[in-house]
Image 1 (cartoon, rainbow, N blue to C red):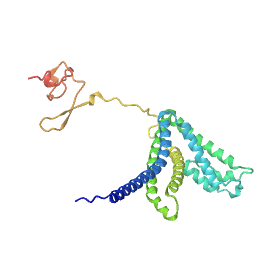
Image 2: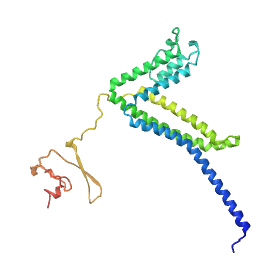
Image 3: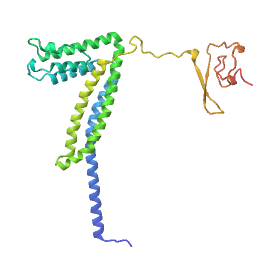
Length: 285
């Protein structure tokens, strides 16, 4: 027998309302976490769409290279520091590692009256000349294709790795509530820093790849090869085995002389050139 009482019904109704309200807050909180990722996704997708619609991405690549050089100089040459305080050796090693340049940075630092802006411009000029030489060597059109391909590949890979890191951050950030910290605010702050770091790494990686890229056949034009008609093959399904059989078809065969045809499979194209199968043309029983 069912237990029915106004007090019990009211208590169950209140309990259900509390559970539904709690579940709603959980879903609402999860959406706030998703909004952080969605905002970053919009930025990346907009950049990727722009790159896909642009045939020449050399301006974007040049900007990335210049910003990478600025980061290198800022790291090894502190603001308002004397040349004696510069890490010229470290900057030279960075130029070799990232830009594939062997430049006398240590000698530059010993020049009288040299400033960090002069070092900056010399590195940018040297890197720009190196890329211009590659464009002359391989051809401007091929270099534009290489730049776009490398940029898109690295962007996609960097974004996938960033999503994985965000997922790991999201799984562990809830524990910070025990330290009286808002997990959502902590997630927003660290996700932003991680996004900025990803963009910086993206610039450096693209610059490094393009600085070291070497093409195997620079003089060969990128074109679709036409098939050799003498090596064309026809395939058909064998009714007995159910497997595809490959048959060589001699396109240059004399279609008017059946004596030179040799043995022709019934499902192969007729050598006369009618376009029909052999069994439906000259091989008809």
